[in-house]
Image (cartoon, rainbow, N blue to C red; front, side):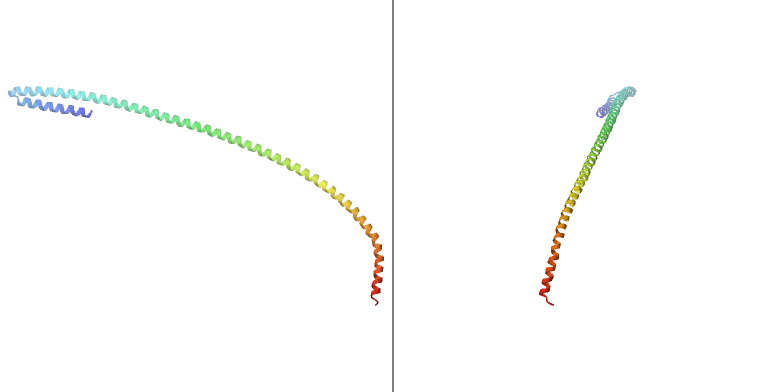
Length: 188
């Protein structure tokens, strides 16, 4: 458009200069020359007015086009902003859902672990009780065996003591014999 406007202005100025030179160089009387100059000036003013009107119309059209493009761009920007806002809102909602799902999973896993620990604790308690009962039974059995062993050993010791008592009478005889032998070997 700038080239076109420059061309039109150049053509207008060039045409006015050519007309002025043609009028001035044509042999005419002063009155006739003034009339021709006035007529040419009016023609040029009309032409300038036409070009000015044309320029105003073109400028108005360009202004309208620029306003429409600005409005379109503004609408596009608003649409883009709304789209971005919608995407962000959707992402936030999706993130909330993920967070809620994760929290629910963690609660479920925590509950499962608690149940497992309770079961394991119960199993350990049962094993401890069974082991405790086994130990008590083993202690009772060992106690009874110890009593039987002590009783049997007591009887064996009593028998041995009896046997030794009977043999001690033999010792007194041996003692007497040894005394006699010692006296015999030691006359003093």
